[in-house]
Length: 349
Image 1: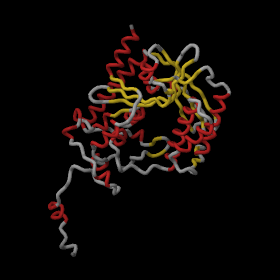
Image 2: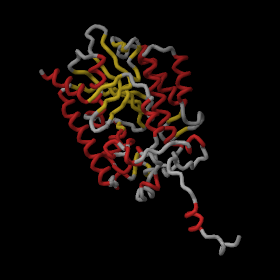
Image 3: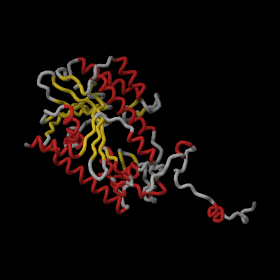
Image 4: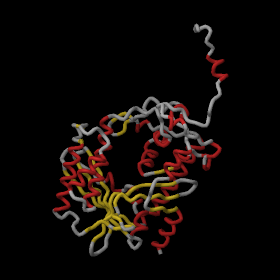
């Protein structure tokens, strides 16, 4: 057939389009078989993926609403994750999980084995500038293992919740207008005599120095009271220890902050304001771009040069299977906004 004989418009007009399945860009038949949720069934008229909130997701919302939208809608047009980004994620996850295992009393061989199983980047990959690799992660864990053995927080032990150690505790809070907030808490410790509570939050950084202001007013630390309400309801205040590992100096820095339940009243209001902002953006079909956030973590944003395009061309439709995956996730603690407010009123009396 010559090019003159080929009529593209005629071909398209004669095709029967199946609008119940997503496009399978990768050739995966499982992906192609997913059933798209009609917009008429969106709860509150909003794509359900935008209703699923987390601490990191809210940080994205605050820095660039457009980035938040594309992340939640699982765009397929992002730049491929660089090896450096892959190493950074694997390093932070491995060190955090290893520290939790050390607090839980695991022996060194088990800590190393779990670190190996949890390393998601290529095993020999290395970020020489930030001094991050699987092997440098083991150095960090070895240093913390000896810190703990030498008496670091010796009078504290991991709190037991439902007959298991309170490490990597997952929580899910049903808010309002179909929004939910989910998250995980690294480690919860309790003093053996006074029963005081300390929450451990593990962080890693390539910076030589750490400014305490970076963490002082973190909403993540205040949100931990959601978990503590369930596992230690008698506690009126608690401390959060940011355990920051500095890769260049290969040393830990401990930043302690005291949090009170009075701070949570404002945190609840701020959380509700975020949900209202998301609703407005969705109703107006306008998630603003923030040019000052086009450079993230010293690199160009992965959506740079494509975020101006129409969202329909950049993202996959929401499917029932996507929502089913979230529904099947296992969380240790399930709460509602009413639970938070009732607890707040009880502690204020």
